[in-house]
Length: 369
Image 1 (cartoon, rainbow, N blue to C red):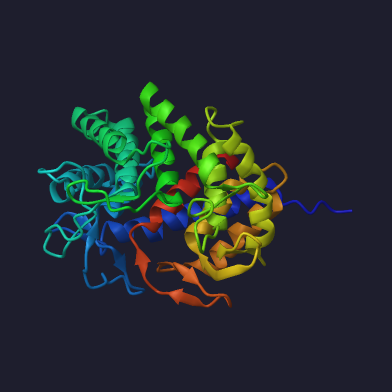
Image 2: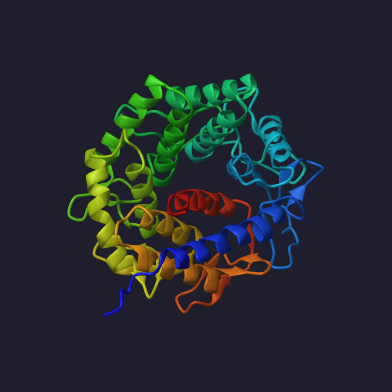
């Protein structure tokens, strides 16, 4: 009887193809047509013909994701210079000199647009600056990292161990409450900080955050990480986020074995059973497994891929996901952002934020090499 598992060479070939497509077809988009040289900022999105979409805004979070991309080990000509430009633009365009912190967005002319301060943005600034500082070890970069960490601790932190999702320009309370996605990216930012330096305050904040998420966001029957706190109306879960959480927790010696890790380990199987259909990773489900949004997003597939790399015996699923990623999402001009329930392309733009997910996916898949 033949072994149904793929050979290492099959996986290696597919992985090499993905890495080549990323280096040759995706990253160069953000060095050429995706770059606004006048403002030294990445355009928010390109269309299928590589033309920038009409500029409505530039977001600090998108700039931070690109900073992560170009400070990664992508061996791309000009990457170091681009990372330096992105770091300086983040400070020049988005930093609030009056109240501290960073604005959510600026307009096409480079003036503050949405002046609110949100956790998602600040988490990505911590994440990107920690990663960048790990590469360059420059004092200004570490000072920015420290300032962002201080803002998170002093402004966003709540008494229950969670963090407020959004605050006013002057840090006024907007009664936003905590949301899952910003907390996850803050955990990711804390982990990145600990990867480049010892930091007792960050370590304690991370452990407290994970305890608070276990207490307030995890659905007890399946261990699912919900998008809003338990008991909130119209709550849901996203398979992509279960897989993303699994990767973060499984790869951290500090967090492996915590109650949150054990919950997410349980959630993985349920999310896979209900949220992965015919190799498609679905967008949103209710806790009982009913599909509420069958959209397929490339970022969720990328998160599933790097999570599978950590699951012993998942070689067949991993190969299937690599094949369907290549066949359904990648094309000569870049990638498709979203497919509908029937597998038809439902978004034709290519956002500047997506290469971050593909870069972290490739980094996670490196363990297969």
